Length: 256
Image 1 (cartoon, rainbow, N blue to C red):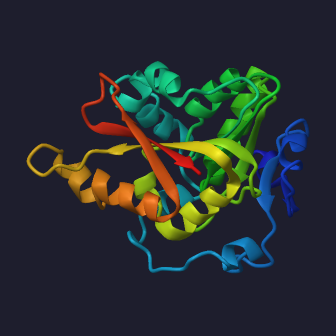
Image 2: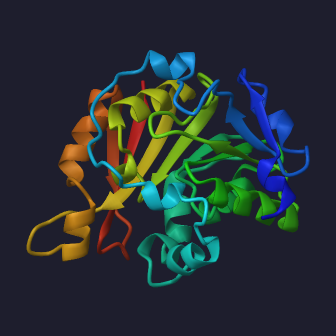
């Protein structure tokens, strides 16, 4: 494993701290935990609940995860959210200077698109549970000379971003991976500025139409997810039609 894998920063952040860290070489932004099982003060005050899908993220937490294998799954034209990326990007309405959080960034292809859209005055936080994915995003950012992406190691209960630090949150084919959605949504709500927006893309789950694999993998359909998100304080703005979407939907929410 490359030496940078253990080059962590352990700190508590204010909203202005995170953007200043990217110029440091191969740096991850994570919040210090006194032990693997402890929670930050922010996480401890968030709603607790039982896991809605135990073990759904185990393979992403595996330190032997092969990023190239997942690039082959995620960054292919047969995947709707990849082939429709320009349409999705347009629907997100990203403006120069925005601060964007890509939650469940995976291999980072949307993080890189957002970094280009927000420009030199904007910033992107690529949040994921997988250290291997974050290492890849950092490597790719360095190779492409992208200076406005910071990687953040989240937890199964928190995105670990400072309060009122982002203008836009993107959750793409990731919401169904929220093992503790109440807590994770609370952390997103806290991180989003008042009036900020969140786009959620996930799989349709329609018996008789949806693939059996999706029915088994995705725990609930659009209406259930929408109600969970609204219960966390978000208001549904609209459902945006992406013409090429057959298996996915796109919902836009706002924090009032």
